[in-house]
Amino acid sequence: MKTTLLRALLAIAALLSSALAHAAITCSVTSPGFAAAYSSTTPTTNVTQTYFTVTCTRGAAGDPGSVNYSVKVDNGLNPQGQHNRAAFGASRIQYDFYKDAGCTTTWKGNSTISGTVTFAGTGTVSVQSAYWGCVPASQAGLAAGVYTDSVTMTMTYGSAQSDVSAAGVTITTPPTCSISTAPGTVAFNYVSFGATANASTTFGVTCSLALPYTMALDATSGTIIGITYTLALSAASSTGTGSEQTFSIDGNIAAGQSGTCGGASCSGTQVRSITISY
Image (tube, rainbow, N blue to C red):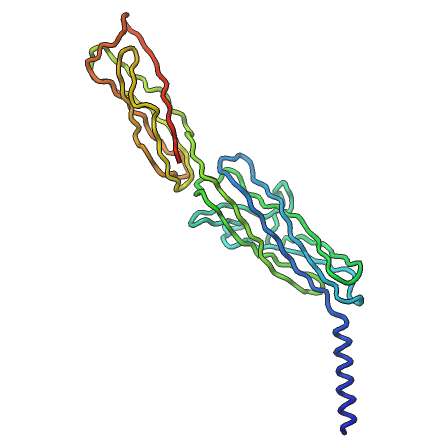
């Protein structure tokens, strides 16, 4: 009875050793994701090329000489419909993964990028596949900041084996502020020794969402043809909304000024400047 039991144990040990000698091919997928700088005033799509790496290990000569793989991605942590979005606080910026530099073929859902890893012998082999992160142009109402997202990559390979990893996304939007509609002319119609005269013009400022800024004139008074005038902005500061905000430059000429006009009528001009600081 003891001899029979010993033979049975030896047979089981031999079978286990045989199974271990033919270890399966193992693979993993990794990607650095992509990072981009984006300005909402840029008229074209921001395109960034990146890649993922598939790394496979063949442990024994008896394993297959190659392995096929396919990789797909989800819509990240902040999707809107079929689109991916990166987040900065409550603000969102749209982007998507594509298979081409022209940003025409999306890579998401059931769409995959496939390939084959081929071994020359045992050991580890890595291959890379390119993809592109595309951020559409003219996305208004964005706060200046660093937007982030994480996309899940799922790889299937060999005989229904799989690996999952994350690809990070970082999109930086710098603060922007500009005079989007230039001011017109503050045109006074003043009569010598006459009553007070007022005039005004408007201009537009477009700044990043939640961005504080200030405005100032280079001078708030001046003299033209002997007539002294004053100017004032309707506001000295504001906070950007991502859309154009309208302000005015209001002018005044005090009553009773004679001026230096020797004829029946005359005119003159001065140029003033506005500075936006943010």
